[in-house]
Image 1 (cartoon, rainbow, N blue to C red):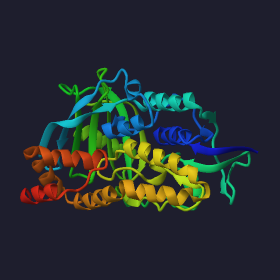
Image 2 (cartoon, rainbow, N blue to C red; image 1 turned 135 degrees about the horizontal axis):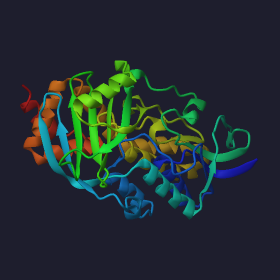
Image 3 (spheres, rainbow, N blue to C red; image 1 turned 45 degrees about the vertical axis):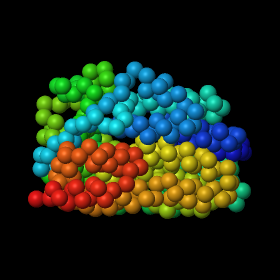
Image 4 (cartoon, rainbow, N blue to C red; image 1 turned 60 degrees about the horizontal axis):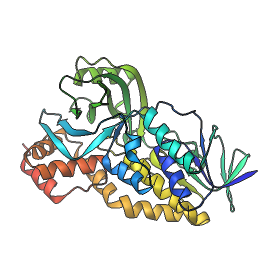
Length: 369
């Protein structure tokens, strides 16, 4: 039985960040993934600047990660009732296909000393001195960064999210919308609410386009395609694939012990926007650092997540509850159009770790009608 200080299951952004963080503590690190890289991953491909900040803190050259895909400085929002706002964000985002971004980030971890193996993990058995993986290797600490259908999460007895705390989205690629260069477009709708479509430009004339809604709405593939075409008329994307998004409103309690969860495996997906890469790299970085605590890693990771994201998660959950009423979203978008500070607050809440501020609540309340 081979033994590693840290074994990371999943080579996406959460797993790569965990590997980089653990390597920084001097740990031996093995990354297991069922796929060869580069590989496609169903996602909106949007990367908030705060996610890149986390990676910069891990010593990653983020300019190399996003090379070939220019910054996207503007965001266009349309509410269910038709209120619209388009502004430059405080800092530009990036839009990089996951086949590119994930492979580049994982390569950094491998270059730093992590070993990468293609392996489909089937059984995870925690013990007092380590975690057995498929009876072939042992981890001092195991990080589950294996996505929405996490094998690791199930192995430690944590159930999947309820359907009302799980979204489903359809994504493909199409030519940019006319005049869209440099602008991320997000269009919400009252039909099958809460639901929205997006078009995020890659900088090469193409855009990542998609549509998502809650699983509890009973969406079929045909309904998702219809929603996309209704909100983005004339768009005919190629390569449409669907995926599920376990929202942070249904996140499990990180257990004690030697098994840690990060990213989608921990239901770290923003309930307002479906954004997950910021949560992924942040939770992965925290998990890699917590792994140094050995048998106490679970407690350390849980406390670190609470300190770093607890107040934000409370705000996001409250905003998600408020947004059940489309009229509230209409008012919030009108407030964002009238006040740059409110716009910035909304963007930070939906794409990073912002809070639901009194300024935004008061401005929204004034515009209810």
